[in-house]
Image 1: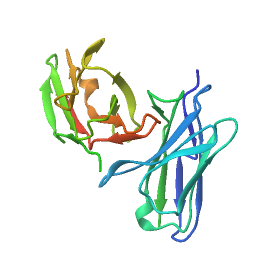
Image 2: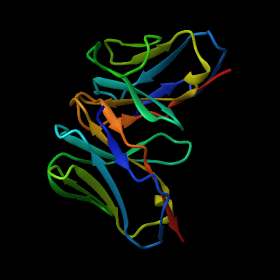
Image 3: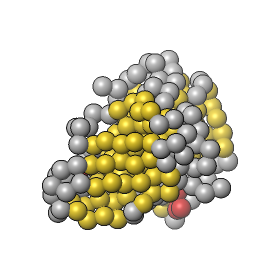
Image 4: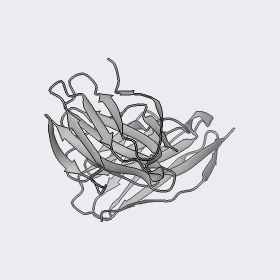
Length: 111
Length: 111
């Protein structure tokens, strides 16, 4: 059974640009959540989608957005990138709730 | 703000010893608790989930939950150098794949 797949693995962007990250959950999993991990702040929850609906949102500015498609794949978008957005972005999938499994992450560097 | 607190370590134990990792939380309504292991440069890997008071054992790992005292712990028996990693305690805030993480405890197992 394939795990959670995130693409791309690495990204380098310039301040002011926007970026889209993709996440394909484990087959059959309907919930996808996104997290930002930085050395200073640790792992922080961004948002969670279930059946194409955002159920929860963390405390991040509106520049961070996401969506989920009918096949449960999810994307997150960050607009007007800032240097502080440099981080490891992780997505995790679960069936409905309960145990969540993480993808390998996308390492975003903003220069 | 719901908090999850962990001793950041580092915690060093000799090979073969028992490693004990502890976590306290502030939200009495939390129902689901998880332990993740994260190797340097990798994404978090789910080790254990625990939902009810008491102990839950899986191989060399035992999770313990005490909701009255608001703590959850992880014991690693017969510690191996390959167990050297950062261990993250997490709780599900809303029952909707919305994990709130502690800052992690770095464990080093000395051969």
